[in-house]
Image 1 (cartoon, one colour):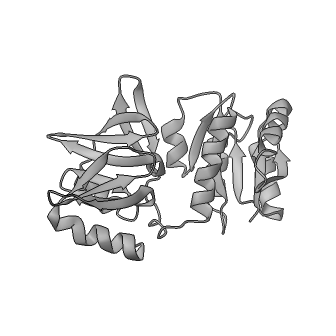
Image 2: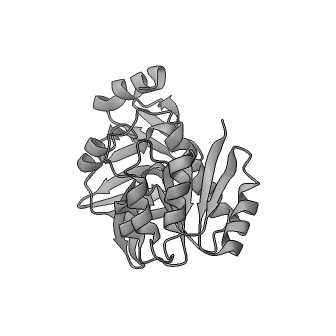
Length: 242
């Protein structure tokens, strides 16, 4: 499947660079360009796009206002913000953006973002409820951090604290495991009173000689204990995929 991309940026050089980066992703094609928000809305009224790579700081109609207008379309495309400023992140996700990239956008960051777009447009999991968060906010020593839910490998609870393990990082969350399980049950599977794991990352369930089970996730060496009350649900998921 090929995904149609609309590039929206008031800097021609930025649009040209993004076009070059997109050439490395055969399933994404630049279907159009716009130098400002109003031009983008005009283009979308006449053409179809699957994803909009959208700058925020633009003259007249900025990216945030443009995103809110896009969301009013009958079939709005996925929005990924590309901006030189990191102080609009919360507003960006309130505008229902799927991702937020900082300029200059690296090849690696774009590749990760496009993978999220693929996952969103071709979900292998049940569709999330409308309005559900795609990112979880957390406060760290670096300030407010936004973590894409689908980047999280597992979450663990230790007394009062819940930590999310994602792409080699560990971040403390304000949400409880119960809150995460209730909201993202389509993505997380409870295997222990203190552990949620990402369903797409489950690799194998191992029976231990001394009794009990351990669950292994892709690209993670350690095994996770599975409590007796959750073994049946884990086995059912591995058999049926639900």
